[in-house]
Length: 285
Ligand code: C2E
Ligand code: MG
Ligand code: MG
Ligand code: MG
Image (cartoon, rainbow, N blue to C red; front, side, top):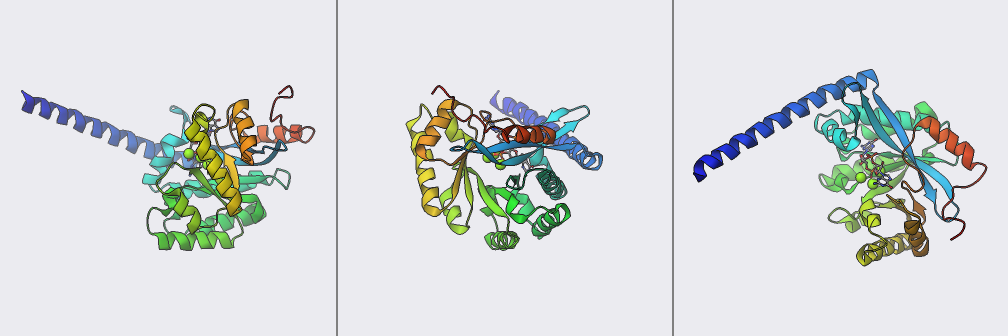
């Protein structure tokens, strides 16, 4: 009968919750160990100035190589690190490592680091950023922080204070995943971002969805009027690059220009492009 069925469903739900709780605890334990054992590595993805085909910087993307889990995606472990309070320690390591590696690059190349909204809790973030800069010797103009609108969701006084302290350090700011949240527009009025990164979901169907095209065009125009730079994320095809060029979007990032790569691959790429810029659009087009 329906009642028994309901009870069965509930047991199923309970078992599912139990399993998820155990998975979470296991990953939390492994993450703690991973920090001690240095199982993380930063990969870097080029950010490209479309008109010139030159690389303006690289976004640091964290990778976790676990001995038995294998490769774990940041989309899976960052939320656990946030929940377990480990993101502060991991985030500081990411900042240190990103700045240290950026020092091996030519002095016009910027490094962009993703900051979790959870890192804005407490008062440690400005210190972590200042310390990464001073330990590495990286000039503040070469560090960009990527934040999502999640940062603004709670305690906005505290958030604005931390943002002001970060800004005083001279680093620049990108709003990441723009357009995916509820009120992206109100946030760019609250804080002077240097750059907006248009979420890859708008790029995916850029060539056959007039709505996406209109949104990318509008955001690009808005950024120009507000004196911000625009980066399109998730650019995979030559068609998308051509459209972005026509819309006047300044920068792009995505598999078309390069996948996230190791620090040593970055050095090779930089040595390579010193001789010739990246091919932006095919020569016969
Ligand atoms: P995100 O900051 O928006 O990074 C962009 C993601 O899109 C990256 O995934 C990147 O590898 C992927 N991507 C780049 N180009 C393309 C493309 O052309 N096509 C497709 N389909 N994907 C592309 P990844 O590295 O798996 O990172 C996922 C998310 O995890 C990031 O989104 C960011 O929110 C978070 N994350 C990654 N590294 C860090 C980190 O060091 N700290 C923090 N707090 N979060 C991080
Ligand atoms: Mg990002
Ligand atoms: Mg993004
Ligand atoms: Mg994202």
